[in-house]
Length: 293
Image (cartoon, rainbow, N blue to C red; front, side, top):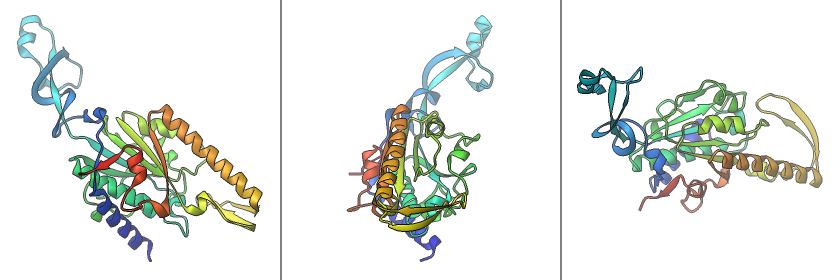
């Protein structure tokens, strides 16, 4: 099956799964601007909230001209805001997500489409981003997954490169999900700092192929880094596989520990078992989705 076709099927499957859920909304995510839900910060609804001194850039329509006439002080009125919670899904766009023989890319798209459908059920806006040399919005991803452009997953770099650049201005107090295999050597703190900045809730889901979780290789093998094209000759035996497993466990623990540091939730899932029994357990367990009825 062609890659585009398999990804389209993954998007359709993810949407169907997501219709059984709604996005879980932490209280902090109820803070934003100009939407359908009443929040706790000052904003633009008709419910008067408080005063504060004028600051450059404030809407002049909110100046209290009566106070200004009496005291010559520039005071603006603050109102309780109406908010529309926002979900931003960030996908690892690197080549390692499109590893030959794996379905990591399809699994990532299934998760993204499910979250988009669950966001719709919770009356939340959503958008998908692809991280590579830069972080760019996925065409069509504010709408139904059926109209999304399929990402190429062809970036020859790890997603932290784009995350550490001057990236998009995600909605403050929004909900964010990062989906990646996390298979790059840099420490996770810098990428997590960028992902968590201003977010009400952040979840990180690691998607690995079963062969990456538990390789069953034996004998001499040549491995190729799909992002750098570098080669490494390795003799794989039980000892080498055990060493690999230990290194993967340490790498995963670094991410788990860093996520706790930034208040993020961390889960892992095998790409081949992203859904079981019609459920997305990784997204349930990280607190991102809840059953819709």
